[in-house]
Amino acid sequence: MDPLIARLGLALAIGLLVGLERGWQERDAPDRSRTAGIRTFGISGLLGGVLAALANALGTVSVLVGGFIAFAAIFAWYKAREAAHDEDFSVTGVIAGLGVFALGALAVAGDYRAAAAGGAALAAILASRQVLHGLLKRLTWIELRSALILAVMTAIVLPVLPNRTMDPWGGFNPWEVWFLTVLMASISFAGYVAVRVLGNTRGLLVSSLAGAIVSSTAVTLALARNAALASNPLPLAGAAALAAMVSVLRVCAVVLIIEPSVLAWVGIPAIAAALVFAGCGALLLARGSGNGEGGALARNPFELGPLLLFAVLFAIVATASAAVAPRFGGGGLLATSALAGMFDVDVSVLGALRLVRHSVPAQTIGQAVMAALAANAVGRLSLAVFAGPIRFWLPLAGATLAAATAGYGAMVLLGSG
Image (cartoon, rainbow, N blue to C red):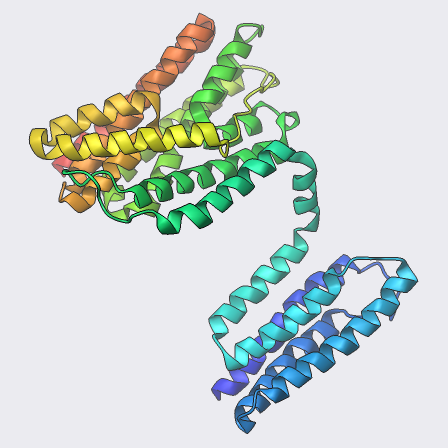
């Protein structure tokens, strides 16, 4: 097949995809009452591709530029008439039409993969109107300001930070410390947004699972406090076990993103522990009503104070791990990871993963990650004992012990295999 025909087909497909979304949004409007629907958007994308092809064939970009200006004027004029009739001040439709034309041109004259991705992203953004508007209504100004400040700090500070180690052991790299801090905050923010959008009104299960993406320790502490006032704390203990499952899976995702080679030693033991947590949590929820109050909302992960504290702790742990590992071997790394994991599993895991580039075996790193997970589980359980009744923390302790046994057994089998 002629590559030009395939690219023109992609330009048409981009327009049809966006037109499908626009047409569905306006499906109840009378026929011929809308400026642009699925056919118009499809033709707009194809027109952009055709003009880009003509510009290439004639060797002059003015054909494409002139065509884009003419298309923009005609499309905007018709949209203005529609807006005046409907008393609608939204410019989204106009921008979408111009975007379809430009992506159609890019599909022919530029990177067709970028054009395809841009078309899918444009359709997804247009289809997410209610979700995005609902998110804006739920987020507070403090949360939005924190995210904006962090974005500015990252865009300005990160490029000027030295991207080299600053200590004799090769553990403290300012650029890497800040980059991984931002990465962890971004992962946590996804869970935080889920909590803010869904809210606790969706029930104990949703709030606990979503909150655990931010901090399973905070979720466990909130559930323990609620259990002290609950008539039946078993569902709360089940929710805490499920939050622990999410924490384990979250660490696996971090390992997969940063050092996939370590996942071969962490994946099976971690999944075994997560499955046990899931089974125990489901069993405890089934034995209770499951209608307890969640109260598991965690703090905003983009608050600058805790974020900077995380960066400082990560820098300390990374430097200490780099200094201890060559001198004391795997035993020293396990001790460092367990100690740091007691307070913050993310700090400990990131500190251990960075040692892969220092020729520390992936198996040793995997053992350090598992030690951090085990220590963090002990820390969560200690908080549960301190803040909750025995009917809450005793089932959670049983689930934690069973999960630890399953994970350790899988790790031993993996090491002997």
